[in-house]
Image 1 (tube, helix red, strand yellow):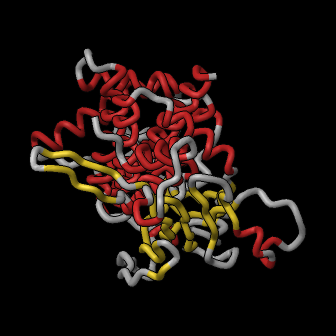
Image 2 (cartoon, helix red, strand yellow):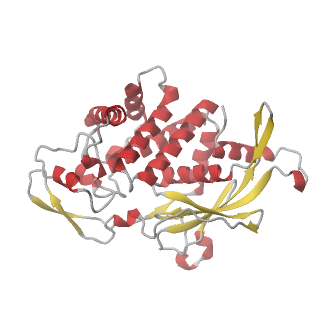
Image 3 (cartoon, rainbow, N blue to C red):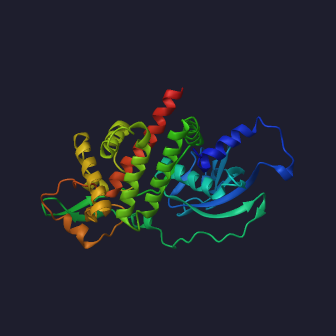
Length: 362
């Protein structure tokens, strides 16, 4: 089975140390600089005074095989990042011969997906800037000057809404902070663990990672499509371990097994509003997961959309149909949860899956 970009490239990087050096004209890799855009702010933990004025504090990852530097001055969102890595040549054989290519974009995209998974901050490709030290004139991916995360109430002290009994409420809201600290050891640990998975499991997980990343991209454009992608991300990850079971059972069992205990102990500090509409308990989990999967099947096979309430949380505005559901006195933590809650479930399960595999490998 073909290794996907980040798997192939990272394995080749570590294998390259033991290989006989080649001449420049036959070099196995090209040094790349790819710019990314983060709709949040990532930093490595920094000890010192005035990090916003210190260029050293902008380094997020310094080691190999991936180095990451913040181009944007601290405190500005969205944040532009510079990813530096060596991209190794890949060979694909056919009956008529072989094709050689460098999986540059695929590797950068999967790096962005893994970084998004670890931080829960949306990281997307911007453009290739340098190859072998030479500037590359590549048009950047199109992004609106307005990023959807800014719809989250950054500075509001209260949120006005309606209780499940129908009366008005005023909910105190913590200040939303786009900042997320990440250590290089945390990233490298999960990456190394991914490399040590059996090939079918690793490829299934990377596919799951890509689907999760696509869901983050779609969350502010089409909530229904994003929800489907999140379900598919779990299905891809569960396809190896629970392959003998029915599809809905795979979905439920994978989440039940890998949802971290901390999920129930901590509130969502990113989509703060979803805490008001997602007050579930571990006893509710299986029932909610079955409802989610049934709605997924209904949308794909019967043309029935997800309920409007799923879009509550990511933005400060929603469609009128979603708002009307808040007036329903019978609604108690919606049967099909809002997308921020489910995104956090998927995030927790994928990270826990890698963490547990790491523990077994030690």
